[in-house]
Image (cartoon, each protein chain N blue to C red):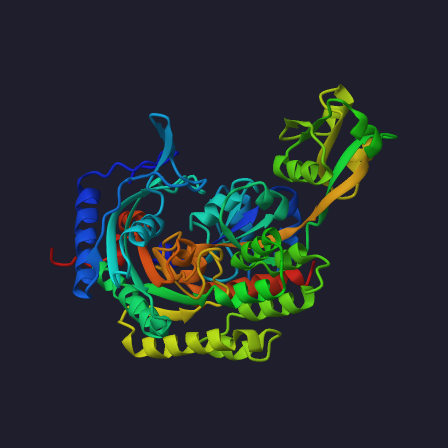
Length: 323
Length: 218
């Protein structure tokens, strides 16, 4: 893939064919699981994120679709009384890159599991994670790692301690960088510094399996997080027997990227040699209520641009699949 | 091909931080091969088979790590804070500690600078300076300089400078002094997010070894 800055990728024959094939395979995987495709307009007329590519259509400021989940949520919330339970999507989104080598035009395939009944949460989270576990084999990726975390493990303590939004964001960013020293520097003399630091230390401990969750039981927010820990434990226990060969399933309690969006379990797919995650998702129960619908949702998005880069750089990681 | 792919590269800094770092590694599992160090070799073998070092300028180093070329790196927090690169920052290694300070000609104080209708500050650390100005409610023209920043107030290019101060010797030699400290900096152990999270079995022990070696001698 060519690399210009800003990076609007032109795909030559091999890349274009690979993208088409991968989109088809992933949409087939989702269709087999009863996910039905929706296609939102490439132009979004609603308020736009800072990272969006904006332009004037006459005297109206519009943006190129910068996020599929947001675009679909607006579409579903305005057109349906009850949520379609399973939706999928494929196509480009345009977002200004935070890294010079990241493409501005990003090719994505993803799915959303939406439900009005909150008791479906456990099953929905397992369903979404199970589908994401099938993605590497669907693309012929020989080795990958799925990291499972939970945004709630930091979000709830920060809310309970009533940290101002700026400070909460600074703590989340520092923890996401695995930088305990920066968490400490951000909190400074805050009254909750001792508790929050002890909690972040537990999240960063990197304990294997469910040991990390057990460690939280003796932490300062044990009662507050008991339900979320139990949910995460159940999810991991349900997923463990389904892990396909070539995929490692790991608990990553310090995965707190996207804390403003995710409310529960988070999923991130990595592969050796990839400089960034290849897919990401999780539970985001705040999105639809913000749009006036009491719906719950979980989903993931496969990022095909870094996968195309990886296939170029490390063809040994991919096996050829029959077209 | 496989040997190359199986080699872990660690990016070490050149310059002031590197001068402090390399003696700390001498005799350790990560000591650099002396012969390779004296040569023009790009990859310097270490005492641990399969682990090699790249010696890079501090400003370039985060990009090599973020791109996954080097799995781990050591870089000053001053450099990290001035770049947009998304990296894991696994530890504050403690050594290479400096103050990032506002400095000016002897006798000049902060109140005097606040009175200037058009304050000019020369610095290499634009983001840190902007953040401090915002905290202080001040505005200033920032004069970006890459080196010999202390010349700026002497020759009239700026009223004061924001620069790293370790002993204060260079400032003193130029008739300058610290007016106020904006923050402190030190060496950090960094890792590429994708590389580190995809290969924890290999990289976590190596990161722990670097922390053990360097934190103990900070």
